[in-house]
Image (cartoon, rainbow, N blue to C red; front, side):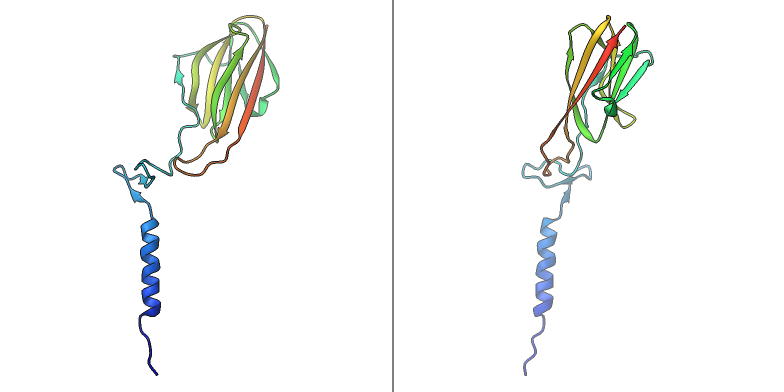
Length: 157
């Protein structure tokens, strides 16, 4: 009887070679690469991209995502801060009516694990601030498509 050597070993070696070809290759900064265009994959983009309009006084009221669809009263001239979790992407959609709130301080910057926006109450009356959120996914990876609407009502008095 003739015994075959190397059949299983050759298959294992082939499997390892194929798997190695699928592994990501480190880019110049050590980050994984491998997208068709040579870009970076596997890294999360920032959940919000904004800027700071300068120093601002501490907010009188801080509203969070769990406060969406709730109303809050804030005296004219005082600052309200809205913080949304950094587990989603966030964009400021609208502030209505125009002139009811003034953007001050943080405008869509990441601070302490949240996307932060600050507004000073400019006049008495109701103002509505609306944000649109979505999935936060690694670049070059499949991503679910969904949208979140977060709406805050501020009663200036």
